[in-house]
Length: 261
Image (cartoon, rainbow, N blue to C red; front, top):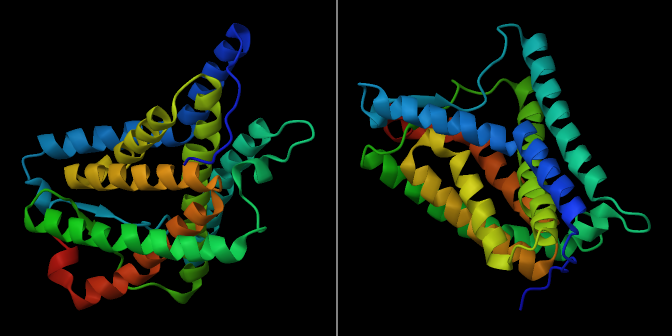
């Protein structure tokens, strides 16, 4: 049984304001990413080079100088977290904490972490298999790691993983879940639409990535509706990205033919 609290239907005036609010938030965040990612996929498909021979880089360097590279990385994290702060502010109501409302607190951290491990393994392991299958079939762009990780970049990469977990899950699950429910959407319409958006902003990696992230979105959306807490999904997403951002260069060094073009 789904346990996320239901919100009353919005009035016509507040409904219009909510629609514009959602559009603006998405244009500033994941909707913008989805558009750029879709354009990137179209360009890749039109490129004479087969898509399986093309590459996309994880966390590319922003500057040749270490200090400026770190500063730019920290600024990227800061401004994305500012968007997270914005949607939490928009969700806040008098007498009701938005953090508690969406379950973004430490009140159940033990069970949240265990749930995160289970969901992370359920998504991360098949996701890696799908990536390798897509590479073998020539349908997935090679995600290219940098040649090793400098020690000073590890904290930035860890923050970037947490940033991605917070940005995506707070907006897709907490914010959109609340706003679309106010607009009268049903549970599965919310889950499937958020999952479709998740797939779109990963489309730059190829069609298998769209499918894999769509499935991830369904699992995460169902889990949020079931538990009423976004925290375990934020933790799970962060752990998956830590493996990708920090563990990826090691995997690329061990199995270069799988992770390079």
